[in-house]
Amino acid sequence: MNTRTGCRGLAVCVCVIFALFSCATGGGNGKKVHAAPDAHSLALLKIIEDINGGAPDSYVAHITSQGVSNRNKYNSVAEVLFLKNPRVMKASFTDLVFRSHISTFVQEGEDIRIFFPIDKVLYQDTVATINLKNYTGIDIEFGFLYPMLTGRIPLITDFSVKSGLTENGAAGTIEYVILENRGYFQTIGFAGGVPRKLLFVNKASQERVELYLENPSWQGKTLWYREIRLVLPATMESLTMTFSDITLGVPLDPVTVADLVVPPGTKVIKMY
Image (cartoon, rainbow, N blue to C red; front, side, top):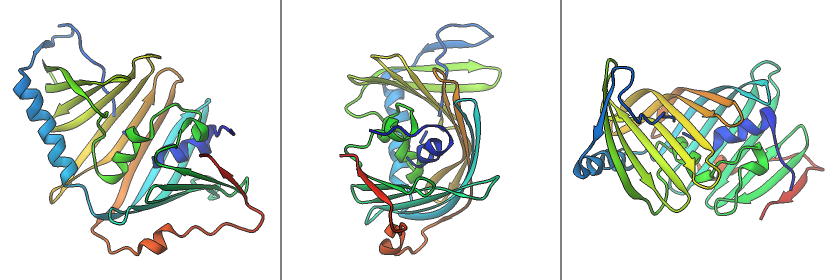
């Protein structure tokens, strides 16, 4: 399979996202860490359940992305259209410097299409089979990233609650809940009553995916983060996404959103 790396790969990575946390293990820097009761951990998970339940039925927004991949700087802007039912999403990415079209990502139900106009290549994939490493060079599970673009907080599947922590410091109180399944640890850090930091650790490779959720904003029952920072410590790659012009509950035609016209001679590659 072809591996997409660099700037265009990160554009796809935006489309499919999430926040960091460094887990405190001791009492340094004037901070005190102690175990939180199980009931409190469940209360934190209930906050996420309520946030995910308030995810928008539809939205239109712009995303400005700035990042570093393979020591190359990356800057793009995208218009994102999303409809929950039927499930369709489109994101078209444009280079901020050269104003050239980088890529277009389309999801229609379980089907995914990713078009790279410079190479005139259209990749066909599915939610069940997509491997972001094939497009971005970054080994991140699609299920970790996608919920962030639909107004939800990602959770690992089939998890158990490993522990809960409360950290008191000069910056205030931060509450953590640590989840575990067969493949991953996930740590969620809460500040001000909402998730602000996420950490995913692959048990086998020990690779970390860190997410910082900044500038939370409520629109009715919907929580939106206006800035999301992604950090991959192993490769020193980073990505900052800033959301603007967010409009919720927009009437969208699913046929129009899912429409993707490619030029004659485009090479089609099935990835499943």
